[in-house]
Figure 1: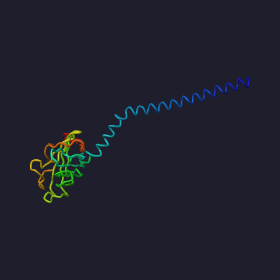
Figure 2: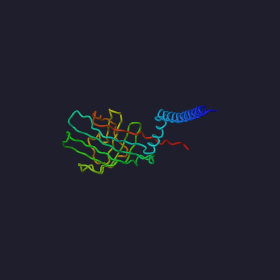
Figure 3: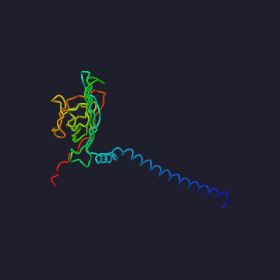
Figure 4: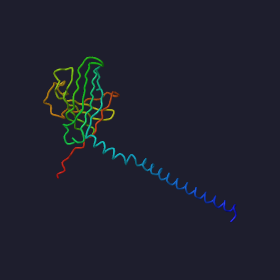
Length: 209
């Protein structure tokens, strides 16, 4: 075999080797891209259950957010909630924790009353939440230490709110209000002033076992 023939043969073998290497690399890359593509396509459906499971483990129910109530007068009424029921307490809503605050002024920046306190019960059903708490600080001395209740219907941009003293004019400092008790959510949230978020509670129904 001549030197020229040998060189051509070696070059051909090198070309085949390089070509094979490129094909292998392309195959691996293609598999990686396909895998990433599959993950991207199935990510929302595959990861969602895991995210849901993590959320479920994190807490059983929640009510959060702040907003002003709709009024035809100059009144400025705001409710704020940060209430949570841990997953480990799913069967006992009275172990909920968190805070609440409400402010009722005659006009923005004007005179009025306010109160804040600690949450002592939380139950949610779908997008409706009922919670109660003890007033720990307020500018109305007579109501400090009393229990008050709230109901929120999370309707997106048209949330509604209710409170335990709706039928009596104002909170009276009662300590006899049962936990997780309030009125129907009759108040409307003023558009653009805030939003409430309700995390549905999964009721621990008896299994009969």
